[in-house]
Image (cartoon, rainbow, N blue to C red; front, top):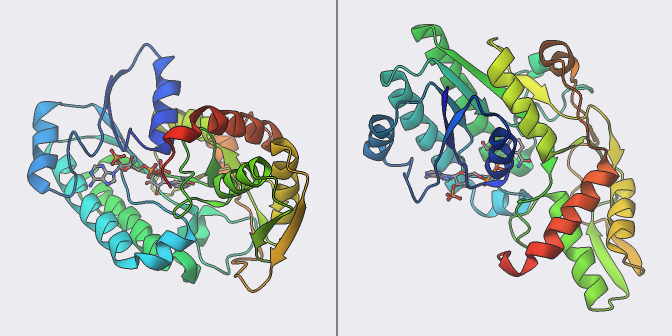
Length: 310
Ligand SMILES: NC(=O)c1ccc[n+]([C@@H]2O[C@H](COP(=O)([O-])OP(=O)(O)OC[C@H]3O[C@@H](n4cnc5c(N)ncnc54)[C@H](OP(=O)(O)O)[C@@H]3O)[C@@H](O)[C@H]2O)c1
């Protein structure tokens, strides 16, 4: 089977490539934005002409943390809507029967009960901190559903939870919580800083999943999952930001104080994903516990920090 991966140069894409390398039954076509700019419809058309994939992992998107989302809301909504619009239309014309779209847990309503089940989607508005990205991703899922219904295509959406691990974005301005904290503690240790300031109260509870587990689950989604409904891919376990910060501090070996900047927003109080469907439909359980995953991530960061952009 010939599989096309968009966004293959990104965080989840690089990890997915590592998992797929071990599977001889798949021929992989991995593309980046340098190969084909998916915001240009003629390039998307050319992509499908150049290769005739049997299936697609569609990972290309504009992704970022809260600061990036707050600073560039128009870029987030434009890129994610335009890219997907061209991509799905050309995929349909190229008669692509199987596609796995990487959806996003931030599209669930801000006030969804925990654990968050897939059917809670569209029962309320997402958190305002990444509103435009979240709405664009939810619209991308609706686009997929429309093609699925009108053209009887077996296109599905997987919802990775808060994903972390090697190849993540560690930049100061665009990173998510785990890479941002690893970076901050690492440089604080290097500079013998007495304290590290962390945003918020530390009370929010989140559900994190190691990226290699996401990658393995995505392959199972391709192989086994055929439903209209999205499917959550996460640990299903909550940990407070306070506990998370303690683990990262310990793994990095920073011995100073932690100062909580309570003037900064906390976001949702609790956000844990319901992973019943992942367990029953895919027969999958994440294999990497949080501390182990953070150790592996920190090791990768130390080996690659010279190449990381500010
Ligand atoms: N990271 C998470 O925690 C998380 C959680 C849930 C869902 N997701 C979803 O999973 C997918 C992958 O996320 P990620 O974290 O791997 O993001 P990422 O590292 O930013 O990768 C996204 C990739 O999309 C590509 N891309 C962006 N604009 C493009 C364009 N105009 N043409 C072609 N390619 C373009 C980029 O390619 P180049 O690098 O070549 O420019 C980039 O490498 C996204 O759909 C995201 O919404 C991520």
